[in-house]
Image 1 (cartoon, helix red, strand yellow):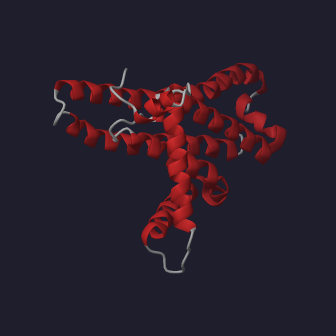
Image 2 (image 1 turned 180 degrees about the vertical axis):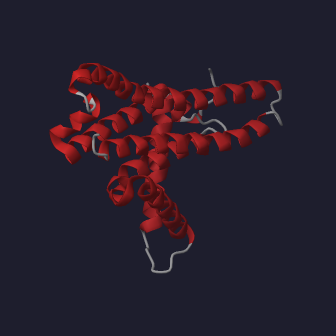
Image 3 (image 1 turned 120 degrees about the vertical axis):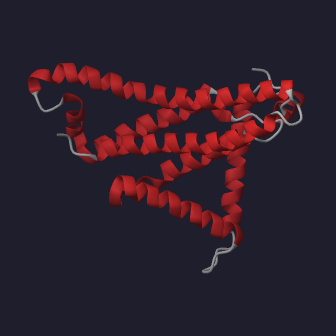
Length: 224
């Protein structure tokens, strides 16, 4: 897929920087989120308003989501899940901006996040249960432990692959369809796809976040 024009890619070429568009727009998303965080917390008041009020509502919603799925321990993992959710959503919404490329339409961006969730999940598991965390992979019957270990290992390794490809496939597919409509009907054609893209952006953020929380919840559970 070739975009007709990407403003950050053009600027990078002028500066003789050889960076992919997914890297450039991922940096843009990080700058945007850091800026929003700064301005939302620059003058914190007891009665929030404006950007502070909006961000407090977002944070509270994410915290409630974490506690509903992880219980009282959920708040501890809010920085990881909250950051991923806001980053993915902003990356997805960038697709609706003309001359912008969503970083989540590139598998490298998604793989980095998926591997982070994969590593964090098992780190949390070992921190919570110690060496006993390995019981999650062996099952209750010692005679079946070798077979179950292989099956569980394959299942866990497939998780980051699943997270990566699901998000990539949906966002890349939306980009292709949007480009096709832009070529066929350059004025009104992309409008319906932009509304659909808005829905896809939120759904895919929710799916990635929910699966990440489920994986962490599984690591926190006692092995049976």
